[in-house]
Image 1 (cartoon, one colour):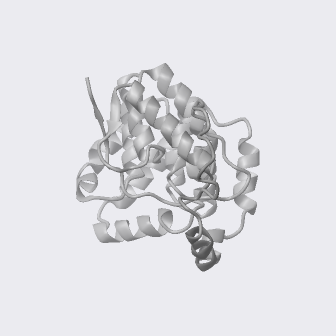
Image 2 (image 1 turned 90 degrees about the vertical axis):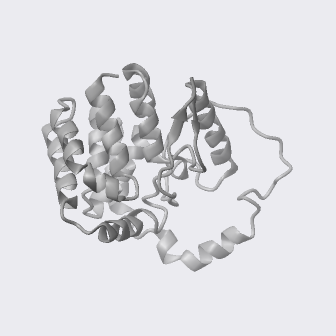
Length: 245
C-alpha cells in the first residue's frame, strides 16, 4: 500500500479508539494526512476533517464520556466485527481463531488482551499490509463496516465519516441500499431496551455454548458478512499489535 492510504487507515483506526491525550495532541498531523489523500472523495475527506476539528478545544473527559455512550452501551454499534456476524454463537470463537491466524501468518501477534476483530486493531493491521492485500481484506469487511456507518448516520453521529471513508478505498458493498434501509428501520437497540433480561439470559450459558462437548469445527476462511438482525457488544480500547521479524 502506498504511504498516504496506509497513513489514512492508521488515522481512521485512531479515530475509533478511546480518546486519549496523545490523540488530541496529534489532531493537526492527522488532519494533514486526510487532506493529502486523494483516494478519499471530497465529501468523505471533509466529513473526517470536520470530525477532527470538532475535537479541537474539547475537554478530554467529555470526549471519553461521549465515546462510551456511543460505542460501549448496547450492541448495535459494537466495534467488534464478528459481533455483527456471529453474535454470541460458537462460530464467533472459530472466526476469532481464524483472524488471529491471519495476523500471525503475517508476522504479527496481539500485545495484550484485545480481541482480533476490534475494528481499530483490524485497520492498524491493514495499514501495514501491501495495497492489494489490504484492499482485499477491507473489501471482505466492508458490508459490516458500512452497516456500522449507516447506523451511526441514522443516529446523527459524525463518526459515520470514518466508515464512509473506508468505503472509498474499496467501493461500497453491492447491497448498500439494503444496508441503509435496514439501519433506518431497526428501531431502538434491543440490548438497551432489554438489558436486564439479556444479562439474565446470557448468565446461564457457559461461554455462550450450551453444548460444550461438541467437536470443534474445522478452520475456515475469515468471512465478514453481517447478520440479518441487530447485534453488538463493545470492546475495550485498542491495545496494539507487535511485529515479530
